[in-house]
Image (cartoon, rainbow, N blue to C red):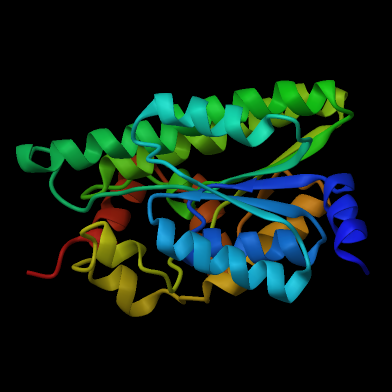
Length: 272
């Protein structure tokens, strides 16, 4: 294919916007998007990593890629990223993957800056991007949205209270918007992975989590991303990869909430 024809082919394709695409599940989901034939817009805070992955996707899958560096802890940057991504393009897939967390006692004041960022990224910016995407897709014939929530969204989480609460919010929001948006051929899926082999726990001060890291299965980011992408393609509203994770997600519905919180707190207690 000539360069001119290749450029025209790029313009004829729909785009996927993936947040938090510099590593982990986000990077793997950007790969899934490229494998599916979408041009890919990769966003995150680490420009060098984003550009390296963008180049690998171009070479391996012959798609166009764009890198937009930004920090979703600032909601204004969420608006900017969306405006830049959607300018002159049809965004057919949004992967709302960027997320933060913090392990520590809720009463500890030194955790508040990180917890504030967690709320801004996991709740405020995720909601902004979801809202913009639903309107854009409804006006352009439909689309799909994959919100990366967490197994944490099913469970109150002592020692990671804010993180668990933000993921419960995103899970609830996803299910509600899925019901509303389906009439416009906009399909919303919440991906709820458990512990995954990524840099999340080290980056987010959770490397001390004890039983959680020691005994729960830890699939790779690629395995989790593939499961999430397949579920999104099938228009499933919630997907929890892994049999044991499903048990942790749905089993507590049979238990008193206080017992669920107690067990989760034991799993998340920092190794002193």
